[in-house]
Length: 103
Image 1 (cartoon, rainbow, N blue to C red):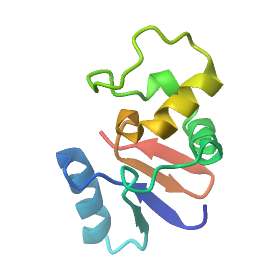
Image 2 (image 1 turned 30 degrees about the vertical axis):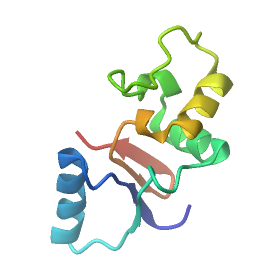
Image 3 (image 1 turned 30 degrees about the horizontal axis):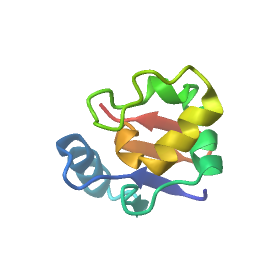
Image 4 (image 1 turned 90 degrees about the vertical axis):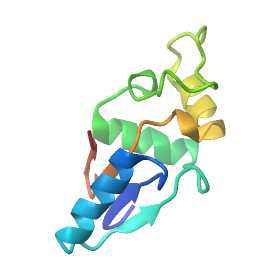
């Protein structure tokens, strides 16, 4: 990933607010509507490493696809999140070798 990127869901108020802050600061970034353009397993794994998180730590627990009985197997979680990107907490801002989840 080059430059700044925001994994964005335009229906989410937190995501819209984060995008607006970037726009207001005149920051150049790429918008990725990750529900329509889901990350690959490799991309998600990379972002998780940048975040210093495990996939279950950034999973949206109230989503219907949340795997209530899935053991903490990183590869299985990543595969499940790639197949169900609504599980990924948002928005995630990636900037070079750093990433964070906007709150």
